[in-house]
Image (tube, rainbow, N blue to C red; front, side):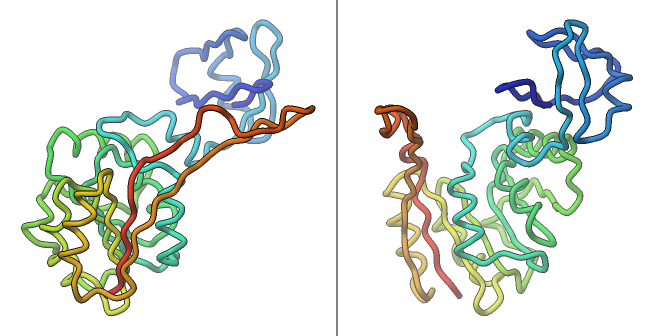
Length: 234
């Protein structure tokens, strides 16, 4: 919901929604169609909108650091993901990339070795109503069951240990993507990716700007380094 410059993600239940602008009766909220408006008891008008992925990302529970939208978007564009694709990811972490991929491709097979992270991802998938993800509490280095997949994404401490399994799972022309917070991981992964084609490593920096008057300039704070992305094609 939107109220002025503020937005709220509401999971409708039995309790009224409360904010600094007052309370909204849950029954009124349920009757309001997306795009419509509803007022709080203080008279503040809210616009009711269908939540999109960026909205839901504010609601999910987080365990480890997530792959941010700026990196996820480049993964999707570089690999040309589409609605017919089948992809594998390991590890799932908090499920942020899982949710992003599930909104694009036909099927996501997600491997997460840690049971505590697995439970977090499972909860987040249920919260968002995602149905096209097969979540596995398994070590990807022990083998990938799926074959002829379009992409494998590795977000793990020792990605080089899973490159061989990724190679076997990928179809000819399929993409391997390795997300690495530190350069040491990049080096190990690239050594293991010998035989892959078009291997490249990039880093993305996101910077907002302040616009207005005579003070148009980059903001002092910015989303700098998050991770390195290494791409290769089988």
